[in-house]
Length: 370
Ligand code: SF4
Ligand code: SF4
Image 1 (tube, helix red, strand yellow):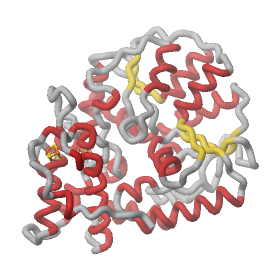
Image 2: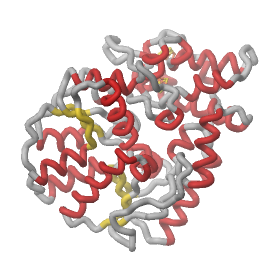
Image 3: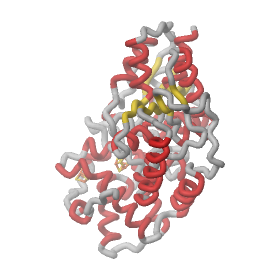
Image 4: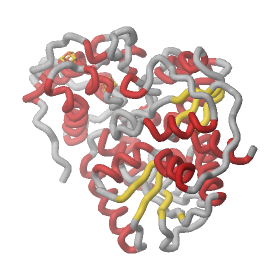
């Protein structure tokens, strides 16, 4: 069973000082939900205040209250920047409060729909569970786990195709499941622990029956669950692609345009993978960092199920703010997460900023083919 923290013990320790909503030099608002709404209830301290009031019966449940709790993208900026000892548990508090909402049947409608689709179809959109695969897994060295966004979203599928082309070019022995089921990371972060356990049991059984030993994934959310909860031998594609470049001496040409990199939260702040993507990009181009990078990265607003519920959408969405920042820095904005790719690519089109958004596999494939 997933362990739920006793958040009543923690919420009262927050001083509401507000440090957690900033970047480390306090120059920028770095909590994506606060950046969009600019109300105190939307940053970590304010959200704790609201949870405390809800627990004590001082505010009643409403759909709107549920939406505020679920608008946190679980980006961990507050974990990084709260100055107190309990900071490590901040996102756990929000997950535990969500779990209580789920248990009481009080999760917002869009969230319930997300869970229903996951439980019934194995993906959040309710598509028939049939994934287009480059090649079916038949006991290969690696299982390539696409994750729900790369499996079904058209833009993210293009990035997955670039990745499989690189794997083919490098002669990597991999296969995919055409009946891939969501590994459940978002169910966990959205507080549906029972659904997460169910998906994990189902996937683990399938992995065992089909002899899966090593997993490769382009999705940092899948990477997080497979690494930290399934306890699998798993690599994110940035780690694997860098090892291919280093160990197999893949020949690449230089990309002339200015390139910048957006750290996906579930790769960076959640799993401390900061350097491999930068090594890849520095080898094939000149990398220009945005002011907010690594532990100070500004979330695209897609985590914690927000890529589906869209509580952080609109003109001042975090993704739109991020592409404006990228356009001031470079010509190409590279990321390494299907959800970030989908969010940032849409935002760049909406904002009409002159920045192209690419997955790291796409730009690497270009450098390999030139
Ligand atoms: S979570 Fe930490 S940094 Fe944020 S308001 Fe509370 S005490 Fe201050
Ligand atoms: S995890 Fe991110 S979105 Fe959630 S409160 Fe903390 S900084 Fe804001």
